[in-house]
Image (cartoon, each protein chain N blue to C red):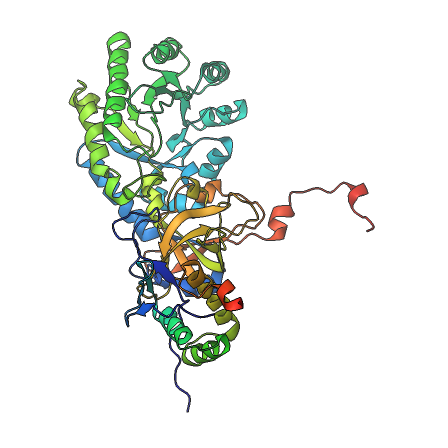
Length: 86
Length: 454
C-alpha cells in the first residue's frame, strides 16, 4: 500500500489531493499513519510504532488500520491495487 | 524505563465538502457526559450492567415545579394527575404522588398499580376505551373518576349504578377539531357533530350518577399551544351549556396531556429544544380560554392536567456500550450498540441526542447507530455525527424518560435494570435486570413435551 506521491499533508491533519482538488481532514493518529505510509513504512512497522506510542493493543489497531487504509483507498489517496500488482 | 502511553483514538479520515449540507448535520457533541447527578456513568454501568436506564429525581421535581408554577400563576385551581402509561415504574409514580399528583390510568392493570401505590380511589382518574365490568364496579366502589369513552361504557355504568348504593362520579371524553392534524376522533364523543352534548344529556337525565367533569386529550407531542386554547374553549362552552340547561356546575375540566417534550422528532429540521413550546405557552393558551368563558369566580372549574411526556422525558437517560464498529458497503461507518429499539422504543419517533461518556478529540465521523438485535429494523440513529467510538466505549442517550420503560419489548434480549438517583445524588435500584427465569416463570410446558432426543 502506497500513498500517492503528490498528496499534501499539513501538521493539523489537513490532507489535499492536487490531482482531484479533494481535501480531507484526519485525526492525529490518521496523520501519523499517512505520514508513515508516505515514508514507505510497512504495515508491520506502522503497527509496532503506534502500539508502542499509544494505549492500544495490536489486534485493535490492526482492525482499525485495516479500515482506515481501506478508506484511503476509497478516497483515491493510494496508488491503486491494480497498479501495485502490475 | 517505561513511559505512559498516549490515549488512543481510532484513525479516521473525512472528505471536506465546503458549502454543502450533509444529512448527518453538524457536530453536536462538544463535551462528554461522564456523570449524571453526581454519579459516574462508568461506575453505574459497572455496578448495574450495560445497558442501564437512569432516572434523575431532581429533574422530575424541577420539571414538575416549573409546570405547576406556569399553571398556578395563571389559574387558581390546578391539579396534576400522573399519566401511568408514560412511566409506571412505582418509584417514579410515587415521586409524582409525593409532589401532589393524582393518578391517571387507562386499564385495570394500571388502576390496581395506582391502588397498590397507595393512591386513594377518589384521586384516580380512569380513562381509556377498555374498562371491564369488574374494573368499573371496583372504581365506582372506590369513588374514582370515570372518564367515559363510548356509549357502551356509559350504559354499563348505568347498569352497575342501578345495583349499587354508590353514585358514580363520571366525566366524558370529548374529541374535537382544534385545527390540528391528525384529529384524534377515535376516543370519546365528538363535539362538532353533537355526540358529546347527547352523551351529556343522557348522563344529566339519569338520576343514578353525577357528571362532575369534562375531559379532552387532543393529541400527542403537540407543538401548537393554540390548539389547547381551542379545546379549552370548547369544553368551557359545554360546561356553560350544562349550567344553562341543568343549573349545575361542572366541577372540573381535564385537558389531558400531549405537551411536547424537548426531543427532536424525526424529519424535523430544528432541534426540539428550540421548537417545543414551554409550559408557560401551554398554560397561557388553556387558562385564557377558561377564564374568558364566562364562569363566575366561585364557579371556575378545577383544571386537571394529565401531562406525562413533558414531565418525565428529560429525567430519563439510557446508558449503553459499543459492541462493535463496522464499515457498510457504501462506505458509511456503522456502530453497533448494546441497546436497540427493543428497549428504546422512542427511537422510532425521535432523533435522540446521544453523547459519548468519555473524553474525545475534536474529530468526528458520520455514522449509523444500530442496536444489537438480529433484525434489520433495529436502527437507533440513521445519521449521527460522533467522535470515533471504540468497542466498550460508553454513551448516554438523553430524554428517554417517557414511554420507553412502559413500551419496551422483551424481544430477543432481556430488559435492563433501572436506577433512580435521588435528590441527594444517591443511586437506588428500582427495577432489577431481567433474568431468564423472570421471563419463563409464567410459561407452562405440557408434560409430553418435557423431553426429547436429538
